[in-house]
Image (tube, rainbow, N blue to C red; front, side, top):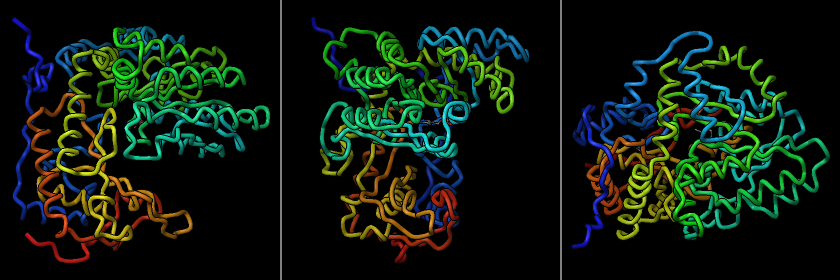
Length: 465
Ligand SMILES: *Cc1c(COP(=O)(O)O)cnc(C)c1O
């Protein structure tokens, strides 16, 4: 007898607490979206059937996490929950000092307030937008150095999240002394489609930074997903456990920032972890000012408990196989149906290439926005446009259109099953079949910054159906 090699994705959990989701009619969805100014950010979540707006803080916790939360210690100082959290972070990252924060951007705020000054430059494979904002808030420059393969959205390179090592060498060699306070590496690379970074690239970047005595810092939000890609795509790592791979990644760095809303498997939380004693002392002083006492740092005792377990659960092989396979599976279905996507699929999301799919719409008619709205109207699915509405407005008020409009479908952790993914593929294919009927949009009201959250839009022609 041979054991079955299943084609089905076996969710490695069974469900014993359910949250109903609601099917709506086309007419209800059209009314809801019109009332929301044709902006999915303004929809009520209960009007969405499958919500892929973000994978941040939207995951399901395990029964073990909930049990630990009930048994938390809510003492202001020195709570047992903090020590369990600290032990977990130290065990996985190896860093000496663990500074809890209410989410990832708070760790960034503390770190960059302590290390960056006007005129500095901080190179990265690609800064996430909150990281960039905190670097720029200090008057420093956030410099993205993605590898060449990252620019071709259909190139099937295994590690498109890598940094361009030659460019990093050049930047460090040419910088005036004392103007590069850190090199950052985002794993996986969120701004480049959730693409992974190889261990070889991390090691080489770390060596370059160390040769220049510049601290090497990992933005670790999706460290477990990155470990899985190293295991499955990088020669020599196939037999290693994800936790060992994660430890090897962190050993290359001097510090990390973390949003526990991602691979912390929690709904809120984060941390900054580092080795430098003097820097840690400065960070803790600032933490007391902005987050709270250093043994809770903006988190409740039960949040600390959830993260202490969640970090290990994110590294579970069966979970990682299910998670990454779900996303790859959707990608395969879409490619088979001829739908253009960013390839290969990354760790937390599938990115639809709206500009290619809706090539009859000019960029100025916001094809990404049109596609995302069609997913909602046709099937109750909510993604997010990553394109001209999100990035097009310049500080001087002018409009610069994105080269490519994408729609990101980000997967909450442990929330959706294979049948949800099958349904999702059906919705996307149904939208593609009617693409000629999709019209563009125009903006009728917008805020001067981050307009995509609140803008009101209007379809350029009445919507049929
Ligand atoms: C989400 C995220 C952050 C910020 O974390 P928050 O918890 O949302 O504040 C930073 N970096 C990356 C790569 C992220 O994905």
